[in-house]
Amino acid sequence: AAAVGRAPAAGAGERPNFTGVWQLERTENQSPFMRSIGYNFLLAQSAFLARVTQTIDHQGDELRFTFESMPPLAPTRRTVVKVGEGATEMQDDAGREMLLISPAWNGSIFRADLQYVKPRHDLTIQRYLEDGLMVEHVTYPGKSIEMRRLFRKAKK
Figure 1 (cartoon, rainbow, N blue to C red):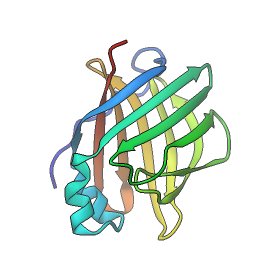
Figure 2: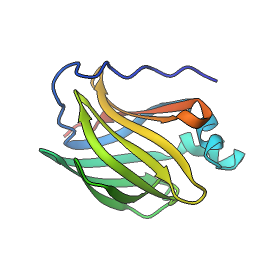
Figure 3: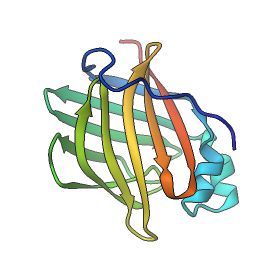
């Protein structure tokens, strides 16, 4: 499997504010990861073609997300995530149901458990800043595979 970058050490730096419009710039190990959670070969191989945008309004311990992708594999999705909440229903970029579970800060890293509902896959997700990019780092401990999606803040 291809190597992906490492998350910063817990407690490294202060909590970032993720407010802004973030456009996917590149991915690391996305196709093999998508295959591991049950996507077919064609969709996994072509996923990098999608233009993904995440708009975030980050106020304290609440993050309001708007997820969009072109071509639209799923409709625009809006989700409010609050630190300490049990489970938040979400959908991935292709419309598959997920639960974001127990979001919390670990130093400068916003992390949560992530569970695909059908079929079930138990993952973890971390969101952090690295070299001016917002990183979405997803790990699948049961299959020893991970991927990262790196987003660049859009110019105003």
